Image 1 (cartoon, rainbow over the protein chains, first blue to last red):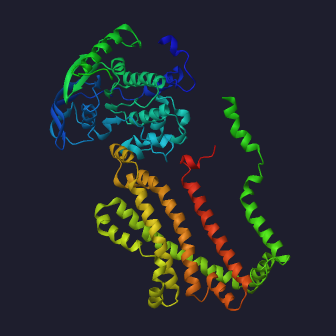
Image 2: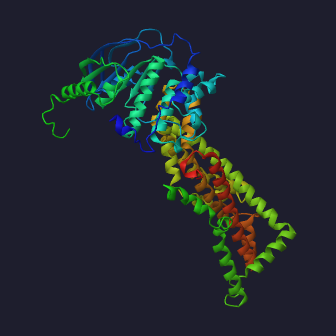
Image 3: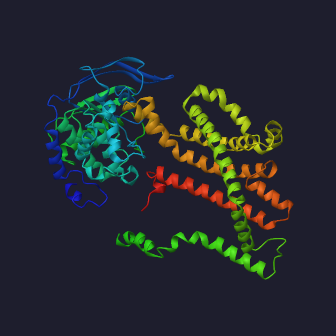
Amino acid sequence: MQEALRFRPADAEAVDQPEFVKQARLLRRDADALLRGLSLTIRGLRKSFGDNEVLRGIDLHIPAGQSVAIVGRSGCGKSTLLRLIAGLETITAGTISFGEETRAEDVRVMFQEPRLLPWARVLSNVEVGLGRERTSPDAQARADSALVEVGLDDKRAQWPAVLSGGQKQRVALARALVSRPRVLAFDEPLGALDALTRISMQRLLERVWQDQGFTAILVTHDVSEAVALADRVLVIEDGRIAHDIDVNIPRPRRRGSAELAALEGSILKNLLQGTEDTSDL
Amino acid sequence: MSLIESLPRVRRLRLPRADGLIPWIVPLAIILLWQVACVTGFVSARVLPAPSDVALAGWKLLLSGELVRNIWVSFWRASVGFLIGGSIGFTFGLANGLSQLSSKLTDTTLQMVRNIPHLALIPLVILWFGIDESAKLFLVALGVFFPIYLNTLHGIRTVDPQLIEMGRIYGMTDGELFRRVIFPGALPSIFVGLRFALGIMWLTLIVAETIAASSGVGYMAMQAREFMLIDVVVLSILIYALLGKLADSASRALERLTLSWHPAFQKH
C-alpha cells in the first residue's frame, strides 16, 4: 500500500508537504494555549420525523478532545445524530450538553459537499467561517492563516469553480477551522473524493485535529477511514448505539497495517450481522 | 497531456483580429446584396429602396434634427418604462421569493394578469390615457414587469438550500444571507429576465408608437408611410434593430461584469 502510494497520479493532491506544515505551526504558536476541545454529553436522545423514529435513545459521553467516528448503514440515523449535535435539527426528546458554555463559533460542521459560495473568492469563502467576527479587522489575516493550514494559500484569489473536488473540500475545512472551533463535526466529508485524494485528506484531518485539539465527530460509511482516524468508533444500528469500540492503536497509524485491518474486519462483521443476505454487500 | 495543453493556444493564435468581425460578415453581405439588387433594378425602388437611399434619408433627417429628436423620445420612453416596470417586477419578485405571506397574497393575481397579452390593452389604455406619454410608459412598464418578476422569483426560489443552510450555520443575519447568498445566487436568473424584458420593451414601444403617438421612431415610420417615403420607413426599422442590439449588448456586458465567478463567463 505504502509502496503503491509513491506513484501518485498528478491529480491526486499531496497535502502533506512539509513546508506549509512548518509555516502553519509557526503561525499557530501565538494562538491562545487554552484552546481545546469541549466534552459532550448526550442523554436519552430521541429524534422522530413524523411517525418515523430515527434515533431511539442515545446515551453518550465524549471527553474533550477525543476523536469519535460514527459508522452504520445508510439510514441508521448517524447523520441525524451529527446534525442534532451541530444544532441543525430540533431534538424530539433528551438532552445534548457541552462541558462549558459555548459560543456559536465553537461548534462547526463540515459536509460531504463543500458548500462554497461560487460567487466569492476562496479567501472570502474562508472569511464566512468567522461568523460574527467576520467584520473584525484581522478577519483577512485569520482567513489567510487558515488557508495556509490546509495548504491552499496560493489559491486565495481564485473562484471556487476552478478548484478540484479535493481543493474545494480543503477550502471548506479552512472555513470550518478559521473560527477555532472546539467541536468539529464531519458529515462524510471525504465521501465524494477519489481514493488517493481521500487518503491525503485523511492525513490532513488527522494533523489539524492533533494540532488544534478540538473534539472531532466524524460520520462515515467507510470503516477503514473510521479506524484510521478515530480514538473510538461507535456503531449505530436502528437508532441506537450498538457497539462502542476503543481504537488503541498508536499514532501515526500505518494504513494497511495488520492491526487496523483486523479491527476493521471485526467492525464490519458486527455491521453485517443481522443482514440475512450479505451477497450484495 | 502536452497536446491538450497546447490546444487553446492554437485556437487563440488563429485569426486574432478577425474574431470580432465574424458576426458582422452576414449583415454586411446582406446589405451588399440588397444594394446590388436595387441598383440593377432587380428590386423596384417602390418596394425596397437601396441601402444608399436609406442612408441618404437618414442623413437628411439627421441634419434637420428630426432623427435625433425621435430617437431620443423613443429611447426615453423605453428606459423610463423599463425602469418603472422593471423595478416593480423586481420588488414583487423579491418579496414573493422571500416571504410566504406575500407570495400567497399576490402570486395568483399576478399569474392571472400575466395571461392577458398586454398589447390587447391598447384600446383601453388609449381610452384611459389618450395618446399621451403615460400611455406608452404604462404599456412598456406592464410588458417589462412579468419577465423580470417571474425570473427574479424563480432565481430566489432556486438558490441552493444547502448554501442557505451553510449561511445560517455560520451565523449570517437575514440581511447578510440575502446580500451574500440569496441575491448572488438569483442573479443569473434575474439576467435572463432582464434580457427577455429588453426584447419586450422594444416590441411594446414599436406597437404603441405606431398606433398612438405624435413623436418617436414608430411615429416617424407611420408619418413616412402616409407620404410614401419608403426609405424613411426602412430607416426606422433599421434604427429599431440597432437600438435592440445596443440594449442586448449592454445587458451582456453587465452580465459579464457581475457574473465573472460563473464558469460560463470565465475566460480560459
